Each structure stands twice: as structure tokens, then as C-alpha cells.
Image (cartoon, rainbow, N blue to C red; front, top):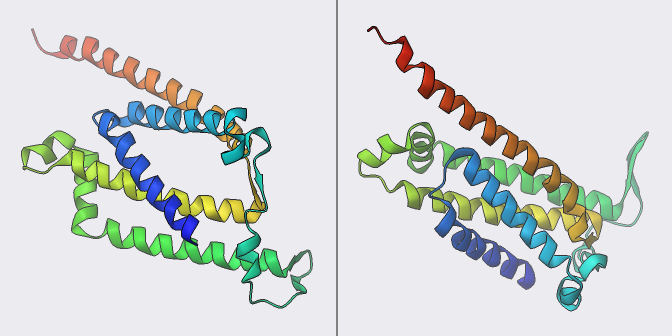
Length: 205
């Protein structure tokens, strides 16, 4: 449990460090930078030089042993039909879905709070929010840190379900998302440029 707490704190610190230089970007450009940082961390964790710490290409096995050691569910098979699970899988599912419900309630409460409404305003028109004296940069920083901490908790659930941690397991999702974000960003830029060219031509002479 102590190591999990350290990981959540590390995720918050990473969000803070990452947010300082990147939160001045907007929309797709911010998404591309954050995905690129995730890819950098994956490659570093996959390095053989860090094998003693991260397991390198082989990853770390047995990371969920302490978690399953406190499993209160008796040994056996549970479920019905084709949906039958052993006690460890059932325990992991219960904990995982409990975290999903808690996270959903937290996000719902935040979205409907003054803090969440300010984030909505920043999303809709950041310049307008700044004109009202709101520190949009700091609000976005808080959001990034909170998202990083929730991502760390999700990482726990993922590691527990897999009973191991491997950096290569994250390669497919990251490599497929980055090109799509890049393409969307290029298309967005071209669309804005097209508007700048054609909109003035619609004005009456």
C-alpha cells in the first residue's frame, strides 16, 4: 500500500512537471505533447539499463501477490454459465469496478462544482475566462494533476488484473493514438487556414 501511495504522489509530481511547459498549448497540440511524454516514459521503462528497477523488456512479475494475499473471498469458482471466475479474478473485478464507481462519482461531483464549471468555461473560451480574471493556467494544471493521479489508480487495477507490468503492453495504444492525433491536428490547422483565406472574401466590397 505504501508503494501505491508513492506512485500516486509520483503521478501528481509528473503532472506538475509536465504541465509547466506544456499547458500553454491548446487543443490537439496539448494532446500530442502529453502522448509523446507517455511514449518517452514507456521507452525509458523498457530500457535494459533500468532492468533492476522496471524489469526492462521483461517487465515485473508478481506485482499483485500482496493484493491477492488479503483477498477475503474463499477459494473456489464463482459465476454462472460461461462467466465463471476464481476467487482472485472475482476480487480484482470487485475492487476494479468499485474504483470505477468512486471515480465516476468524484468526476460527477467535480463537474457540477464551481471548479468544474470554470473548467467548462475555459474549454469553451479560454480567452473569455482569462478576461474575467480567472487563472486558466492554474485550473488546467489542477486538472492535469488530478487526471494523472486517477491514471495511476487505473494503472494499479490494470497491473492487478494482469498480475504483471510490462512497458511493451502500452505500445499498441500509444503508437496508434499518436498518428491519429497528429492527423487531426494537421487537419484542424488546414481548416483554420482555409477559413482565414475564404472568410474575408465573403465580406461585401
